[in-house]
Length: 237
Image (tube, rainbow, N blue to C red; front, side, top):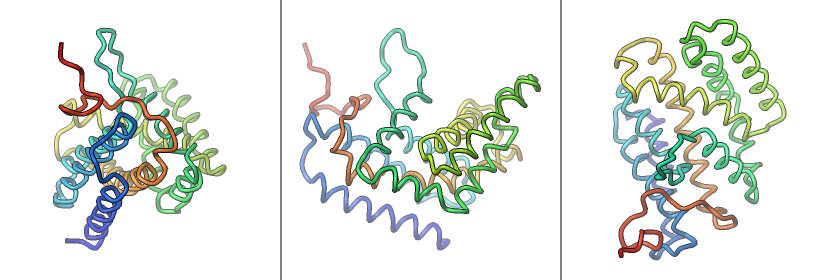
């Protein structure tokens, strides 16, 4: 096991201990959105930590599920419209508005190696749908504006915008893998997977730490698909 993997497992153990100390009992209507999100996310992160460094597609998928567990909202209505980007934007903004949230997220994105990896993904043409659609003029325009927005957010330590720019590229990578649009060994995904995995392994613990320590200072949307015998579980007629 690599030093990085061991450090990741140690971080998860510390987060799990802190989580159980802060939320020792059964969830209430107020705490269930935080408890279920953190509990579910940690369960997927523990799976990630058990995988080999070489199992990159499974590692990325588990990390993405762990992320989605934190920001997802109920979307069961017949008029269902995918709103992943909006849900993530709202989630990061909510974290940034917590006490010390903006500072903590700012410290995360200010790390030199973190910025370099994020920039690598923002500049990766394979992570822009416009490039795949052969709309090269639109790709150049949109990717150029995206890069400017990312660099301004980096200079100004604007964590919500920085992380949203990164999320959009990660989401394209997620779609390529989940929808079977990439083989396991194809280079275009492999080159993006490693930095994506490293970034998510840093991002998720920071998100969870903020939710555990400060998350009760704000209101959270209902958790999707609540468990049986929990406050948000649908009443039986």
